[in-house]
Amino acid sequence: MKRRDFIKSIPLATLPVVLSGMSIRSLASSPLLSALAASATANDHVLVIIQIVGGNDGLNTVIPLDQYSTLTAARSNILIPSSQVLPLTGVTTTGLHPAMTAMQQMYNDGYLRIVQGVGYPNPSLSHFQSTDIWITGENSGQSLSTGWMGRYLDYKYPGFPTGYPGTGMPDPLAIEIGTSLSPVFQGPATGMAMAVTDPSSIYNLANGIQSPAPATPAGTELAYIRQVSQQTNQYASVLSTAYSAGSSSTSLYPSGSKLGAALQAVARLISGGLKTKVYMVSTANDGSFDTHHAQVVNGATATGTHASLLQNLSDCIKAFHDDLRASSSADRVIGMTFSEFGRRIISNASVGTDHGAAAPLFIFGNKVLPGVLGTNPQLPASPGVDDNVPMQYDFRSVYASLLQDWFCVPKTDIDSTILLQNFQPLPLVDAEECSVGIHEIDSKAGITLISNTPNPFTTSTNITFTTAGGHTLVQVFDGAGHLLRTLVDQDMTAGDYTVSFSSENYATGAYYARFQNGVIQQVRSMVLAR
Image (cartoon, rainbow, N blue to C red; front, side):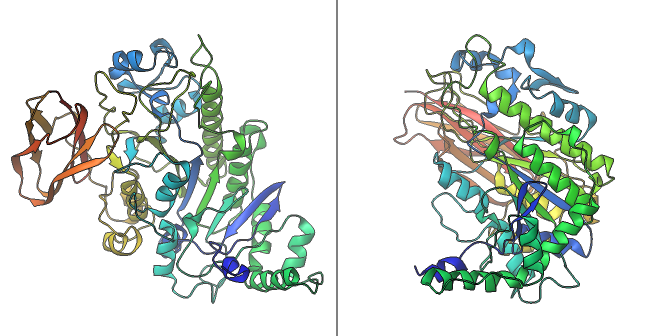
């Protein structure tokens, strides 16, 4: 690929600016940001995405107390003592890691939503591939060149960046704070990128002042980059103006935390009146959640690397939310976390955990529907070394929910143009924010809607399920999270149904039947024995 072609393929127009020592990359072309811009005429909602880099151990983060005996056998060398698990108001079977007192308070105050078992079929255990899946919204084994946010932008703003910034949207559509730009903001069109590292650079950019480019091949490319950057240089001044106008309390954030500094900058830009709709930050500069070894301290499992990482995450999120509340901006902002995958059920001999599959994620803000969505993961009684936490919710259902209920994007457009499939929205935020009424809730919580007999089984088992009508999905996964069979995928009338699943040549071990009917999604553990 020619260098100039490579430059043209860089995801989004970017404009890194230094604000209070933070490198802020303004992503002028993004997809989710387009979801926002699309909704900008109807509301001023903002989404803040926090990437937990490395693959977080969900079982030691949101702890399933009703599975404690299984966890004791599977991960005794890292398991948090049950007496130290933080309780949650109104919940008896689920608690938080003892380092997460700040997010415990947010939950008890009604500002936190925990979504259980979020993942995707046929999970990749590669950091890079799994991250690509999360940021593009693609299926495992598929390859998309655009981010899930970028596709919305192209749909809403064909021809971007021509005509931007303008009166309709004078500010960057999305901003990423960090050392690199995520392809989540890549749209089908060419993006632009430029780094601005100090105030004089901002001044020079805004006024079109450039030092001469050398008369070399590299200088030619430099001149090209500068030419491209001039199309978006107005963003430098609006970022500086908003940052200067905004307010933020440094004392709220953990000292020395890079994540905290990034979130503080976001809070200040929001309070300063910037109309940017999407912000993305990461935990990368505060350490990796890839805890293959020394995840905990021997004999003191509530302490160690994972505890420190979770405390930083928890303290930063609460500080950010409190900062927004202090500036009367909290009603406008929803935040979400994600990590490329969870960890295995069984710990390893290095006092750590290896790459896994599904894990919980968090949605936070004044307008979330607080509580726990879903049930604790159904773990096999005797998990093998390759067994993963089963997927309960597809991560793209989380995206669909935020697009529909926070950014007010029509469901048909989400399915056809942005997520490219039908992913059922979930009750995460107050859907009244989009003037469509309160989102359907899981009225069947606590009721078993899918079961199988016999269980254990040797050759086949009958899976019985109860649907309320409408689209119904029944899938079978193996213990590693691979989708083996889709038994039902159709619109059905309400009632009880039975389908058969035969063992064929499958190995003995744990399997899962997953049921989805609207917002109701349940997982049933099955055991194949010979």
